Image 1: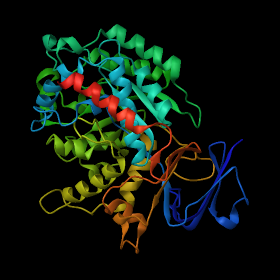
Image 2 (image 1 turned 90 degrees about the horizontal axis):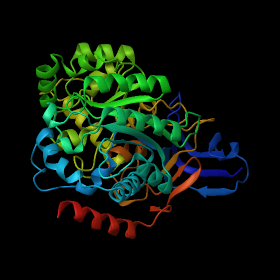
Image 3 (image 1 turned 45 degrees about the vertical axis):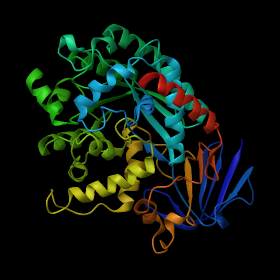
Length: 454
């Protein structure tokens, strides 16, 4: 079994139960699982792969909890730059309807590469549109090529304009076909064992693009197959108005009535959730993927993360789609989460403590692991997966940050990581992705993007 020894880290951030930060830290892993952690004198003398990380900070790999890979094809699209969510979607739906399997595969590789370079080792993707023969299998194959741990969701849209929904009828699917394909994907790919590299979630898109019947049937299917549930919820006031006018209920109340509540459920955004709803979510363990950049880009609002955490709501971080974030930089999103939480705590907002840098890092590691239902990732400890990132503290961005390099990773301008391993396998070496060639991938991606937006 291959072994890995990382040694001499300036600081090794464990995120373990004691939140230890080990000076001159070291880590030893065998076959992708951590066997020892501490200082060099506590490690074996050698390993198959020995890496000296002097001058680096070492962290658990970051976990992305909400994304739409295919949207890397439609960044900064004219007509979708200065509008809110509903008008943004109406502009982009006809463009996305032209995608083919080649588009989805290329977009997935680009999104995964960008995530990897920003410190992500586990990525979740929410694909909810499948035009022209596209399948979730296309994204799964891309994740295998790039080498990231992948949680893929079979999303869906079934409520078209003619039935009172937002999407055009051309991009919605038959509900029986949706459920059948979801079952196929779970049976073909879902691996619930510790250390698994691929898991499947069930993820109808949103209350304004699927029917309550599909939401309820999806919950039944997910629980029968013991997989997790995900959807957009309470993202904008437009959505709240739609739910009240269409169903006579606020978004969270609608979700609760459809059995979308519990530790196996997490929502994307959660901007407009009141205190009573947060209390019920916290008691049930229902989580939220916080996507601050997207919420700002679309002028959706500020998610009440401080109040969520105070009421026990599990929270992770998501970059969201690259047409509402226009990037897939997870380290940048960690910084953004900290800063927008501080804005929310300002005198003109809700008041409260300023989010510390370490809390933001915790959201991106342990928080993400909890949302995805994983107890084997999110921390560096014996028995955990060797999902590790390292950042060179000698970079320009950290010049002068001598007092607290852990906080500097979040406070400083976002950068790429210098080294990363997923399950003990190298993904980033000296700041470069080793699992795929970027230049031809970007060239192909731009060619395919032009075919959509020209």
